[in-house]
Amino acid sequence: MKKIVVLAALTVGLLLWVFLESGTSPDKEDKQEITVFAASSLTESFEEIKSVYEMNNESIKINLNFAGSQALKTSLENGGKADIFVSANLKYMDELRDEGFINQYKVFLRNRLILVKNMNSTFSVEDLKDLSNDGISLAVGDKSVPVGSYWQKVLDSSVEDGLISPGIKAKIDSNIKTRELNVKDVLSKVLLGEVDFGVVYKSDITKGNEGKLEEIDLDAFSKCEADYPLAILKNSEKNTEVQKFYNFLISKEGKDILKKYKFITD
Image 1: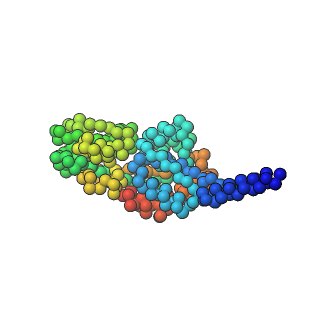
Image 2: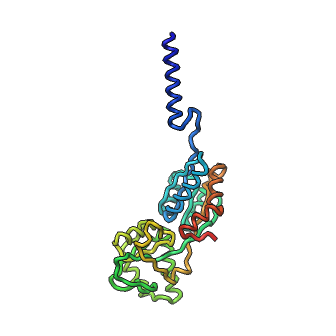
Image 3: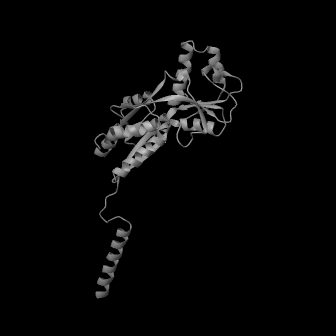
């Protein structure tokens, strides 16, 4: 009997030592997880936001899912679970609201288009019509994704305003070699030299690729800004921790991080 008692005591002691060594305790609760679906153009900025927030809130774990806004919307419509959604346009957020997934949203960021050039390209572009020159290859977003729809808006409005002719627009369209489903893939095509130019967001120019691309601000882009709406999914509206993270995103501290990545927060 004594041997059994001693053995039991040793077992309990060993388990306690394991818990102490691992930095956990038997009654320590699991971290609360918050899942965020965010447009791919937010990748670098939201990774930093996640790091800062988790460092200051040790009981919280932020799960980030980045993809094209249309892919994230489709995922939610097909049962994907998220607490917060950030889109790169109003269209998909409006549709989710109409479908009952959210009650309301807030536009808390804006972004702008920019033309990027592969450093090895021999072509020169100063304005939109130059993209119609023979031999140029161009990557843009698919019309179903925000970056692609903004690009299409620029082309259409440029024709309407008389900045380019319908013929020039047709030549630019013929130089488009690929239409990607998210902006990071457009950027990748340029970095890899598969195309001469790509249309991305200003926020996509980061420390990791600065110096590897040439940035070209086109006047035609100046009138087109991308809105980024933010929403808590209806099923998570009463979750206090989700609301706290939402408040952090729209706070000065959150916006200061986003400004570092060239987003417009004013």
